[in-house]
Image 1: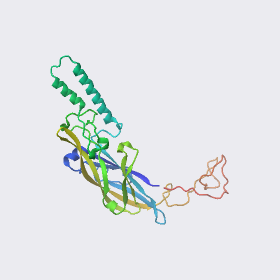
Image 2: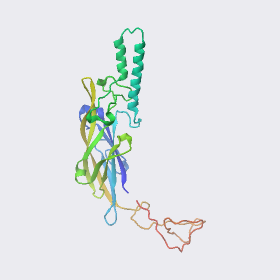
Image 3: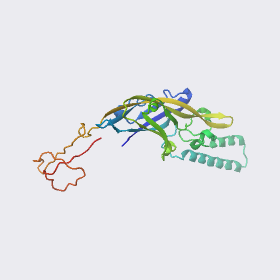
Image 4: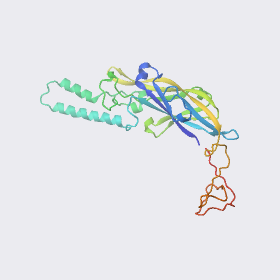
Length: 298
């Protein structure tokens, strides 16, 4: 059975857009640190891939990679899916209440100032374009605390999560891994994620690149737009292989004896072998039974 391995791609979007580069602005993690992965928490992650083979040399275990992109300095992915839409509706309702209160006043000394305050409550709604459909469609700009942002020039707002649009490079060209984008019911990743199967029978270190799309908020006249910005970062896989071995003894595949003891704590018959799946009664089985095997492996 294939083993699942997650690779977290954490992007500091604000600094990456300012520097126009992911260099020193992306942090990669995986769950193989104790098994040989290097560069955890940096942009130079080398993921350890442990392959195994049978005694005849055929591949015994393959690896499946899953890439999960997240944003540093944005609303956390644990926030409910409809949070941004809910905040937009709340701000609209609040603005209508303030407008009703303004029109009900018998004497308004400075209506322009009151209307300006209502505009702040409404906030800024981002225009929907063909390239920003989906979760970015018509949403309002909010900050990390969930408050509506009026002045977008300050830069204190939550960025959309980064999106991986392609995985390519040496590891793909040499058919070490086979990446593809898959649909998923996981709403944190907008229903899509990148995954790959790795051929773990070919030891070596192989590099690969990820094309990641970020979004910059731009003001064009009276309209605010999320403008896509494509960047790349590199990572690598280190594939090792070893023969399949017994997980209990740490040695090669073979018989696994299980000691049997009587009521006195010792067995005159010595070590016995039991057939896997056999039902044991309250009494000890006879030592004259034909030995069986316990085939535990990993």
